[in-house]
Image (cartoon, rainbow, N blue to C red; front, top):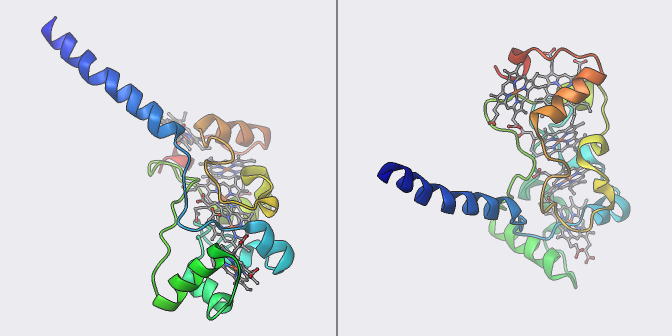
Length: 164
Ligand code: HEC
Ligand code: HEC
Ligand code: HEC
Ligand code: HEC
Ligand code: HEC
């Protein structure tokens, strides 16, 4: 009885803590605007997410890409000026990765975006229309989400193909 109570005392706050963390929206260090850079500046996804067609990780761009335009940029936008401060001082922007699978599961962008030619929108939504960063993933990246599409596309669902 005594041990059971201990477990309960430990468990209840943990459940609340997990629920709390889960509901928290992510706030990025800079309010990046996809729509502006795609529609006004004319960049494409691969100009910034340089590895998306060639390796497993898409890569989130940092100051080495921003500096092409944001060095000495004078802007009325506080957020654009913030980028200038990072670039001019050589400080890395600490983006928080929003879409993430656990380490025991293997996902490859090259496989999906290049070989299978699946559009980014299928898994990430209308990113080109976003004026604010992602606060949460476009869709929950659960195992059933992966497996359902594999079944529909008649791709193997062997455990070892994803859990290597
Ligand atoms: C090819 C040029 C180019 C590149 C590369 C670029 N930007 Fe921009 N960015 C612009 C222009 C032009 C503006 C508009 C500035 C203005 O309106 O004064 C802008 C504006 C912004 C703004 C303000 C948006 C708003 O709605 O107020 C942010 C934030 C921003 N950029 C972040 C970034 C980050 C972070 C990177 C690197 C990952 C980056 N930019 C790379 C050209 C670029
Ligand atoms: C079949 C679904 C799928 C498609 C298509 C897809 N993604 Fe992803 N994306 C994911 C998953 C799953 C993750 C989490 C991967 C991880 O944790 O390694 C992710 C993560 C990311 C990340 C952050 C982590 C990283 O890899 O750098 C970026 C940026 C990204 N995707 C961009 C893109 C772009 C750009 C495209 C289109 C060219 C694209 N994705 C197409 C499913 C997809
Ligand atoms: C000018 C550079 C730039 C361009 C062009 C760009 N992105 Fe991004 N992308 C970023 C930056 C910076 C972030 C991190 C901040 C954020 O989430 O908005 C990001 C984040 C993302 C993420 C979330 C990564 C994560 O943490 O899970 C996805 C998905 C993504 N971009 C997809 C796209 C797609 C699809 C396109 C083309 C339609 C595109 N991006 C074009 C700079 C860019
Ligand atoms: C929208 C559909 C779709 C979603 C969602 C999806 N996949 Fe896939 N996946 C495919 C297709 C299509 C292929 C076949 C690509 C090719 O031709 O090689 C594939 C191939 C793979 C392969 C290579 C299989 C092999 O034969 O070795 C792995 C691993 C994989 N996916 C993992 C994942 C994981 C992990 C997720 C979820 C995080 C996921 N996929 C989500 C469509 C999808
Ligand atoms: C197409 C990819 C894919 C295939 C095939 C796949 N898994 Fe997974 N699995 C995932 C992803 C992604 C996650 C992490 C997301 C989650 O926890 O929902 C995961 C999570 C898990 C977990 C951890 C669940 C948890 O609650 O933490 C187990 C256990 C697991 N898989 C077992 C299996 C077994 C057994 C098979 C074969 C019958 C299998 N998986 C086939 C993608 C896959």
